[in-house]
Length: 301
Image 1: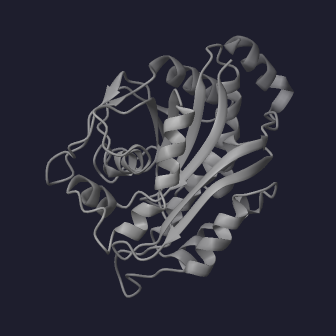
Image 2 (image 1 turned 90 degrees about the vertical axis):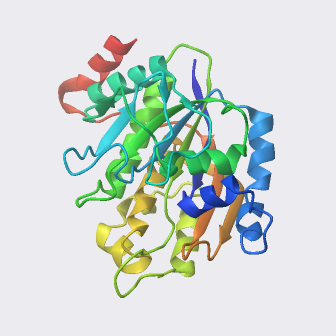
């Protein structure tokens, strides 16, 4: 059976991608930010995931005001790097895993999550920068990637509780897939930052580190943080951290921390990164009316 073996969370700051692409990672400004990923690069090379379910947000590359899906899963064979205004990044094409992606889509929809299924989509820095931070500059990415795009750009974004619950639903979907796969779930975006207005440049180190603390162990308090707290404490873009909660929900009841990194500033933004493994991977069953969840799981099986 497929199994979720680890969770990774990371900022996806576009300037990190630029620094990587232009070989500036050893420069004095960038070196401390990139140094915190060296452990993860070595670890990923050792554990070799087959598939990464990569939770990120699109930045008006694949979606615009014409269509704003709350949760969209990429089910295609491959995804091209997006042109974000200065040409696509010179990084490998992202190879998907259609069979598992469609299985997750079916399982989550029958689990009462209304997923948008995407069969053609370019992926921007929100997805490719984390791949660069964890894998460096390979000729091709070393694993298949299932993009999971979340709307955290246009109000209302999903609640932290809903994101956590989606992670639990993804865990149930992966556990019911009958191919032997080593699967990781990544949550990206954040940490505290605001890109406009009178609070532009806001960074809240104390709040960010409390959030990192909350990712570890058995507490689920993070899922109950309201939107207004993210806005007040972490700036208008700090809401991206709800995407980390999809990863955390997929880890089960308890997690153990393998690695942690926090650095400011990087392009006026806080860089956060954490690697978790499930201690107790048990995920609560779906609570639905009249046993619909069991019927759905019977259909999937």
